Image (cartoon, rainbow, N blue to C red; front, side):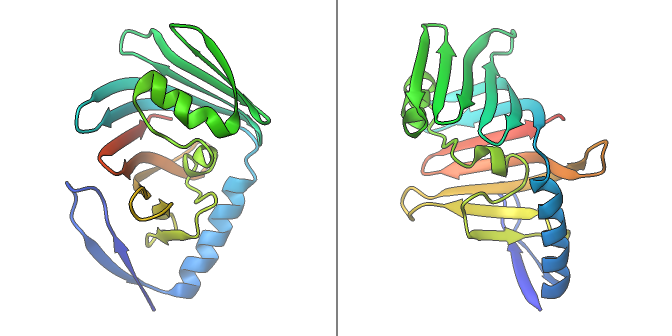
Amino acid sequence: MLILLVACSQDHYLTTKVVSVININSKWNHHKKLIKALTQYQTHGTLFFYSNNQKLLARFYWKQISLNHYKFLLTNLLGMTELELEKKDKLVYIHDREGEYVVNENNTEQIIYKLTGIMISLKNFSQWIMGLPGDSTHFSLDAESHLREVSFGASRSQLHIFYLGYRKTPDKLEMPSYIELRQANQCIQLKLDQ
């Protein structure tokens, strides 16, 4: 038997559930295989960001075109584009109201932080927005064999991703509907509408 601790944000309760390791592993491997088989994926929703000195509420759109090609759009509540990002292979094209940037994928986080004040890693974004742990080996599952929490990085700057809800898609896959990211003093909440 495996005891899974399901931890959410500071506003949620800590619960414990006992589940069978064999059942979890089998269901998780099947679920993971179905998600990894998706070559294209798109979703949109609401992004809420807050840190010690900043708050932001926006709409976002994500489109995975292929393994190394995706688009991310961030708009304000009036529908005006605040940030548009497209990754093709190792280059990232970033547009905002001030202009256009073409950067190596390794420098993307710094440019996004400079433009928005949000520090977010896009290296594994395409994986964890679909409910996969990406490069992380530190993750926990819930009783339904979905990701519950994923951790990346060293302790001081560690990124924690909490999966607080799932929804069924028209093709019967269960995909994340509510994700919370916490790192140092910042929090990003993503509510995925589709």
